[in-house]
Length: 70
Image (spheres, rainbow, N blue to C red):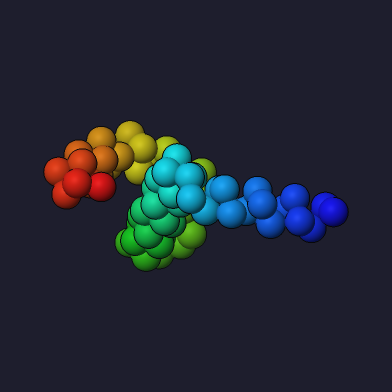
């Protein structure tokens, strides 16, 4: 019974626009983390990358996605 409920929840999450936006933003943060870590020559850490990306890149990223119709 629990497995069936878990599959149902997974299916709903997969179709959720909010969850998809979360995944897309998370992917951008991970990309930003990788780029900044490469530049720094050491791992910057997820938390630092998240804050830096939100403060410096998120608004522009969202606008470009809106302009593209996403």
